[in-house]
Structure formats: structure tokens, C-alpha cells
Length: 525
Ligand SMILES: Cc1cc2nc3c(=O)[nH]c(=O)nc-3n(C[C@H](O)[C@H](O)[C@H](O)COP(=O)(O)OP(=O)(O)OC[C@H]3O[C@@H](n4cnc5c(N)ncnc54)[C@H](O)[C@@H]3O)c2cc1C
Image (tube, rainbow, N blue to C red; front, side, top):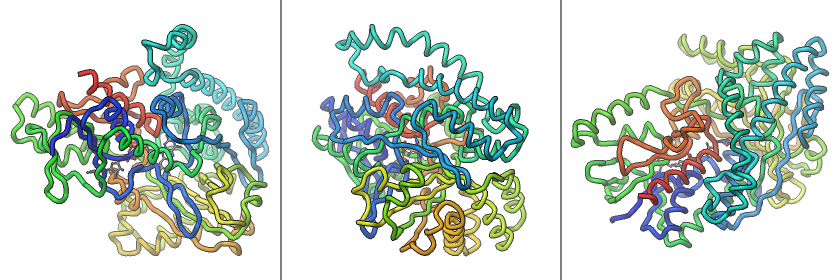
């Protein structure tokens, strides 16, 4: 089978790339290993409850909605509101003035740290302004610059000087948020409560700019999975092909060929790879490449294979026999909740690494995980509060997630008590929430189940079960916005890369943007 373009990976990056390529009339096929497209953006149904297994709502960041408009996707976005809670206090984020409520919330639990709180709120306000500037206008990549003169003269040109200033400022805040906060806040638990739900070593501007993102979240009616579904429909409508349950297991770049798990061969003129980059270099045949190209490829391969994926996630899904209104009195449908003001205070990493260094003792790990769950910050999502059609009558589906280490789960699996460990964590999450914000939960729970970093790794094939690409302390790809155009290049002139593994910090908007950039490079050739 011969194609102008083959796109590997049916996450949002691959779907975006294939939609633009098919729109241009090229013969294109999108190849996805699972029976469903969407990758880390997906919604599933169980017992009449609809759950989002990956991302819980989608940040626009001047990218997602313009892409939806440009491609004329059939999708309805609902505004998705965020709440933040500590112990029994919850605030709803409505606009930038909610920062004052956040300040009061922190002051209530850390009255002795008033000056530190004032200082950090000042920084968050400043960074929120930077992030607002970056995403204030629709991203020019999704505008027709030849036709839309109003956009160029009234929006783009006036925006450029403030963007340049902002990019400069942002570069001065690229140190890890943990370190940045140490300079401002001396109280460890306060630092934790502000930052412990961010990935390890998240750049300070990215973490502290999240307040702006909280105001920019949208929820596709019917669940986050409606976004990939709409893209999929558009590809087929444009005459593109989609092959699911097809895993690429070999790349023969000197012959422009791919091979799938059944030995089927696919020939391309151009290739866009949007799946894991370690997989790409591991299954790439380099023997017959010309020596110069081979040297370049081997260098890149070494760099990529030596880096590791970022943090993964543990997710607990709860089916609750309680009307959604009860939850609505507590928070909005997207809730960052810290059950204890104590914070993790080093429990997260240092103790875990000590435990993993020695031979893994089950009781020690179970003691550790108890504290880890109790003092963590949960991202809680209640789909029924975002869209009432996501739940059976008078019942509520709740998803609780928090960052988790792939290596720990791998070691536990090797030691033979993975299912028991998962069940124990589920129990701890339910207990913690029943003892704090949802006192009715334990008695009203119908059913619970969970996904671990190993589930993520098995389903989408990401290195170390990562959910947003590379770990921040080892990034083998572009991580400066002004260089994003180069992020999609590989050592091969006719192979492009896109998605969460090609730009850092990553996430849905960057996967979409790089998907479009990769398509554009091919269409301009
Ligand atoms: C719980 C959770 C919360 C999140 N929250 C946010 C958030 O708030 N904001 C944000 O921006 N992002 C968030 N993310 C991250 C975001 O969802 C991802 O970064 C993004 O969806 C990645 O899209 P992608 O297309 O680049 O990659 P993926 O979604 O990983 O898609 C890659 C696809 O390639 C397929 N594949 C892999 N190997 C092969 C092969 N050999 N052959 C064929 N197909 C293959 C996979 O099955 C997959 O479908 C979250 C993720 C999770 C899980």
C-alpha cells in the first residue's frame, strides 16, 4: 500500500496532522495501535457513567478553539470551571480577582506565613499576566494570514512587542518551581500545597502561570473524547484512511517503508511520527542509511534513548449513589483538593527513592503510600457537573487522580503484588475523601476501579507511562517557543515528528500545534 503521507499515532497530534493533510487532498492514512483513537484524550462508559480517562478539560491557549474553527469540527465546548480546596475550605476560580480568595485560603491555613503568601500571590499575578499575553490572541498558525487583514493589523502586529517582552521574562523563570518557591517561601508545607500537584521540576513560569489556565478550560459536550472523535470524522470526510488495531513495529527509512504487527507493509513519500520517540528510534532500521545520515541518526537516537519520560498518574474512578447536586454544593466539576494542610514534605520523592534503593519491602511501601495519599493533592473531576448527560439519574461519577512513579509500580508488579497494591491505593483514596470533603462517600459508593502508570504505558505505549512527554530534567527536544518550528524536524528530510515528545512543556495544545506544523512542512514541499 502506497501513500503520500503516513501518520503514525492516533492521539490529538496525529489526528490533527492527518486532518490537515487530508484536507489538502493528499492520499493519507493514519495508523493507530488501539481499537480507538484519542490516545491520552479519551472518554469511556461504564455502568451508564461516562468517565474521562485522560485529560479532564481542555485548555484553549489560543490554539484549540482556533483549530476547531479552522477545521470546522462538529464539537460543542462548554466552559469548565475550576475550584481549589484545602481540608474543609473550597474556593471557586471565576476570574483573576479569585487570586484574592486564594490568598485568603492560604492565609487561613498558614496564618504565620502572611508575608510569604503576599509575596507568592504577587508573583502568581505577574506570571498570570505573562501567560495571558502569550495566549491572548488566536495562534497565527490557525489563521489565514493572506486573507485576514483585520487579524494581522488589529491583533497580531500590536501583540508582537508584548509577546517578545513576555518570552524574555518567561526565560528568566525557567528554573524548577520547587527551587523557585524555596527562595520565597520558608514553610515547607505551604510550598507543597502550592506546587505538589505539578510534575517534578516543572519550570516555575509554567506552574505559577496555571492560574491563567484555570480560567481557560473548556469541556467538550459529551466528554473530552469528543475532540478526537470529531477529528476522526473529519479525516474520513476528507477522504483520508484510518487503520486501527495496527501497531507499527518496524521503520525501514532508506526504503520509505513501515511494517505492522501482522507483517503488512506501508510505503510513504512522507511520514509523520506522533507516538513515543523512544519507540521510533528503537524500531528504526539504520543499517542501510548513508554514513552521514546514519551518524546523525545514531547521535539523535543516543540522546533520545538516554532521556526518560515525565511523571505518570494514578486514577481512581468512583460510581457514587448520590445526586450530582450534592457534589455541586462542594465544588465545581474540576477540583484541585488537598485533604491536609501538612503537605507531602518530602514524602513524595526522597522516602520513595530510599525504599526503592533497597530491596522493596511490602510493608514499608504500604506505610509510605498511606502518607503519600493522605497528604497529596488530588485532581478531582466530576463530569456530571460539566455536562449533565454524563451520569445516570441521581448518581455521580467521580475521577480522582494524582501523580505517581512508574518505576514503583513496575517494581511492585515484578514483586507479584501489583493488583493488591492498586486495591490498597483505591481504598486509601476513598478513606481519605470520606474522612474529609465527601463524608457520605464510603456509604454511597457503588463501585470503584483504577488505572496506574503501568495501564497508561500499556495502552498508549509512552515511555515510563508519561502523560506529557519528557521529564523536565532531561529534554532531548526543543523547549523554547521561538524555536517551535524546528521541533517537528528529524534527521530525515521526509520524516517529521509531532506531539508530546517533540516540544516541552507539552500537553494537548502543543500536541495540536506541532501536529499542524508537521503537516504544514509536508504541504509546503
Ligand atoms: C490524567 C491526565 C491529565 C492530563 N491533563 C492535562 C492537562 O490538564 N492539560 C494538558 O495540556 N494536557 C494534559 N494531559 C496530557 C495530554 O492529554 C497529552 O499530552 C496529549 O493528549 C498527548 O497527545 P499526543 O497525540 O501527543 O500523544 P498520545 O495521546 O500519547 O497519542 C499517541 C498515540 O500513538 C499510538 N501509538 C503508540 N505507539 C504506536 C505504534 N507503534 N503504532 C501505532 N500507534 C501507536 C498510541 O496508542 C496513541 O494513541 C493529561 C493527560 C492525562 C493522562
